[in-house]
Length: 178
Ligand code: IMP
Ligand code: MG
Picture (cartoon, rainbow, N blue to C red):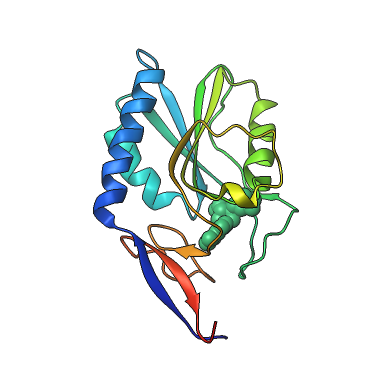
């Protein structure tokens, strides 16, 4: 494998500050109601853990596994459900929690699947968004932590070939000899 290094990009402190701001925004929008958080494994798990403890409206957690990237850096457009939800979403407020939106294909598919189950309301929160890479334009992302340029990032749950998820900050993967 090509050698690479990780350049710090968003600090732990900045992430946690932004997570608190997002939680306030979400709580305001769902005031007086209860929300089921749906995390897409494995990337969203660190973000979801921090976010859910700041949210007053989140009452239940569930998880889905969908295939997207395999073990490389290339997006695959064929999104498959590997593990489905345990919860029944019918008539409930749902917040899909994602680590990063790239082409938008994963979230578009996940949202479509959940919509057929007739939730009361679906909203989407993502820690990171790479708007330049978007391939689907009809996906509405309600809450975005940070908009980032077209760079491959790792840390705070996000991996490169399953590594670096446990870094407390977000870093950019810099290939050597580039
Ligand atoms: P999309 O379907 O192209 O939007 O892909 C979204 C998924 O691809 C995310 O949930 C991540 O798992 C993965 N992904 C996208 N960009 C990156 C990145 O920069 N680093 C690591 N994983 C990424
Ligand atoms: Mg993911």
